[in-house]
Structure formats: C-alpha cells, structure tokens
Figure 1 (cartoon, helix red, strand yellow):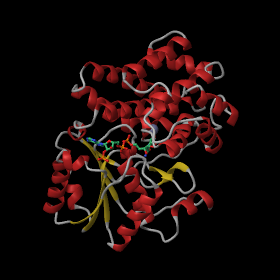
Figure 2: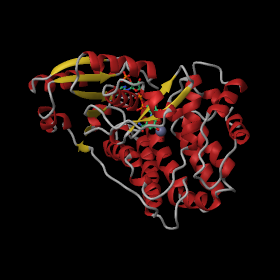
Figure 3: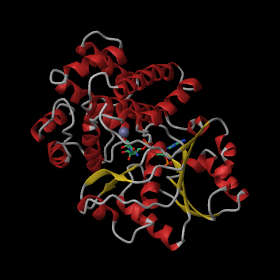
Length: 380
Ligand code: NZQ
Ligand code: ZN
C-alpha cells in the first residue's frame, strides 16, 4: 500500500422505489433546481413524471436542461453553465446515464466560476474547488459516474475527450427499476465498461499483495459472472442489481487506493470517440483485448493473475481467449469494422488518435505512440 488520502461524500440509495425513500434529500435542498437529462428516454419510460412529482411535492422550482447527448460536448456544458447562472440555480439534479451525470457535474462546477473551466484545468493546471451541490438519479449503470468526481467531456474545438475534475454527487439514487427500459446494446455496453474499469485499476502498478488489486479482480469476476447470468436471462434482476453495484464499486475509488492506475484503453477509446462518436463500452470492447494481447508478455504476472482469478484459466492465452469469447457472447463489436461510427475508421483517424492520446506511465509496460498505433491498427 502506498500513501493515500481517501474520503467520500456520496450517499447511496440502492433500493426499489428509491426516489420515494430518498424524499428527505429533496426536502433538504434549496429552491431552484436545474433538472439535467438526455434525449428523451426518461420521458418515454415515466421517470420524468416521477421526478417532477417529487420535486413539486417538495415545493421546488424546476428549470430544465435537456438533450444532453451521449459523449457530451464542452459546448453543451457551456450552454448549461449559462442557464445555471442566468437562473441562479441552487441545486443540480442529473437524471440519466454517465453522459448526463458527467455533463451535469461539470455544469455544477462551471456555474461557480467566471473563468473558462477547460483553460483553468488543462492549461493553467488549476483544479476547480467550488461546485453547486448535485444529486444523481442513475438510469444506465456502467460508468460509475454516480459515485465519482469526474465528468468526461469532449471538447470538439481542441479534439480532446477527457475527464474533468468535478464534485461527486451528494446523493445517488440507484433503483434498478429505472434501468429496465435500456436497450440490450446499452445494457451490455455498460456492463463491459464496469469490467473494463476494474481491470484498468488492477493493471496499474501496485505493491505486492495489494488489497485494491484484489478488490478490483473480485469486481471483475463478479461482473463476468453476472454478465453470463444476463446472457441467459436479460430480466434477471439479481444479476442486474449486482452489475449496478459493480458499476459504482469499480469507479468509486476503492479499487484505486494506495496504487497506480492503467486506463490506457480508456484513453485510446476516448480519443477514438472524438472522431467517431462511438459508444463508450463498444469502443472499449474492441481496444482492451488488443491492448492486452500486445502487453501480455510484458505484464505477464498481472496478466496471469487476471486470467486465473477472473476467467478461471491457468494460462494467459486461455484467459485472453475467454475475455474475447465473453465480448463476442455479449454481442459487442470485435473490430472497428463492426463499430457504429459517424466516420469511416481509416488509418488517418487512427493516426490522429495515436498522436493525441495521453500516454499512461504508471503501468508494467509503457507504450510509445508507434506501439499505440500498432495496437489500434490491429483492431481494424
Ligand atoms: O439520452 P437518453 O435519452 O437518456 O438515452 C440514453 C443514451 O441514448 C440511453 N439511456 C440511458 N438510460 C436509459 C436509456 N435508454 C433507455 N432507458 C434508460 N433507462 O442510453 C444511451 C447512452 O447513455 P449514456 O449516458 O451515454 O451511456 P453511459 O452511461 O455508458 O455513459 C457514457 C459516457 O460516460 C463517460 C463515457 O466516456 C461517455 O461519455 N464515462 C464517464 C466516466 C466517469 N464519469 O467516471 C467513466 C467512464 O469510463 C466513461 O468515460
Ligand atoms: Zn469507462
């Protein structure tokens, strides 16, 4: 275990009918609420009415900010910040998946500053400290945004998708009932994202016998088991509840304590999404096995432990084979050809991704840009 500081602010309501049971949270917030949501799913599945009803019962004034897109853009964040300021918002309530919660978090931060957040964080290297209070109602599990302090945003003007520092939600409502309307594609994409996070945490450098590594692998193993339950029966509520909590566990910091992180796959996927607007879990499902294939001899100890613990296999090659089989069974794309993308993924795009990605150095094997390009090309 290396030195660490750990603290967590988020209160979790993981239960059926969580919205009603969490009523005291809504009673406790100030008057003017910015309700942030996506492109209509919460209206189609009835969550919107439920949320509006509870806000009305608690005598809140609601200003809506909608149409947050998957892979939210910085332009959308700026639009939200302007509305939050103009309406003197007291509290932000995000209702949606990772994209909505991320966008809302960064709006909550930006509403407390006059300065441009991107400039402040990435050019001046100052992490913002202030934020409006925020609560989250999760409708799609996977990203862990419901319990962490990051908002992943695409800045189209500079061609970078990146995690921006934000405050974690003060409370998050995790009611599996709100996720039942998810399309199969997003259900499995989210589950893969969780699996990916746990493995990304595990693969960062760590001291011997690090409990954070063991927790990460336990979450990964649990994810795989529950994904197979879902493949048998998509309506298996026990599996869906397990995966919902795995999502928060893999990204709430517990697997990151006292060690380094990998997240090289994520960094590649984020840059790929800048040019393709691809679905996050689907992009990861293509890149992660290719990355592991490339580093398998260079990070052999970690690779072998993962193969044994997560996939119950005695060799790295068997472990990687099981990983690829899982991805195929989930119906996730296995190559860029199968990826839904707004642009044809040609060498020019891959070169742009490889040259703009930030390289993780806290891993058993540090890639250079040529190697990143080679890995990306192996995904074609
Ligand atoms: O926009 P709406 O209408 O809500 O539809 C969404 C969207 O089309 C739909 N959806 C969500 N809940 C639903 C539903 N449809 C039916 N029923 C429901 N209950 O699902 C689609 C995808 O939603 P999105 O929020 O984009 O998915 P996800 O939760 O996978 O979030 C992806 C974003 O999170 C970022 C990703 O990069 C991506 O931008 N990440 C955030 C992280 C974080 N904050 O720590 C970490 C992750 O690694 C990731 O980078
Ligand atoms: Zn992710």
